[in-house]
Length: 210
Image 1 (cartoon, helix red, strand yellow):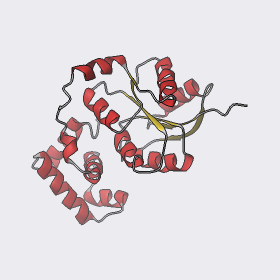
Image 2 (cartoon, helix red, strand yellow):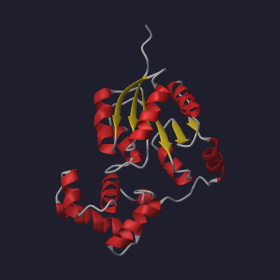
Image 3 (cartoon, helix red, strand yellow):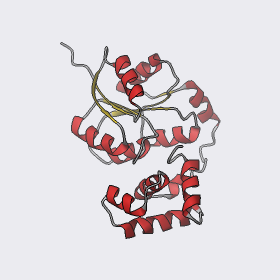
Image 4 (cartoon, helix red, strand yellow):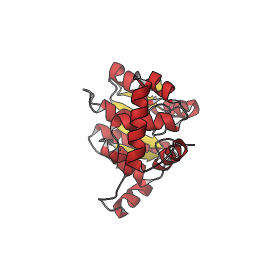
């Protein structure tokens, strides 16, 4: 019997993951489903899948930041981002993590299967619409998110989601004072002046979504 390749799904919408499961299971083994980036990091290291199909916009820690964290670990899984964001900024950030695919959610299920097949062969698949936009984008396009450290991006997402400094501290297991320090440095780097502007900037950057 041929062992099926193992896939981990990461999306906070259950109807999406159930649809993905039904699409994938005839050919692959879905070994787990997670709903936020922290769970993705934990379960990916535990389950060691061959492929991860990851949404970008997930609570607490988004998919791109989760994959960035996993890149520092001994994990060989191929990553395919499946997202509603038809934006080259998201695509650029995703591909910079070493992802093997960037697919829009409205694409046909066959495109995801094609992307997985390519990933397992060491190839990259990008939805045609995004691929065309990437070709038009200058390689030196500036992305403000690059100014921030990984921890600052985590803090920014959690603050942008409406958490207080104490709540962020509890989630990240750091002190509230440290959160406030990160918040000050983030505001300084991004040139914003208050918490409301910070939240708006987080939305603008795609760190959090409405």
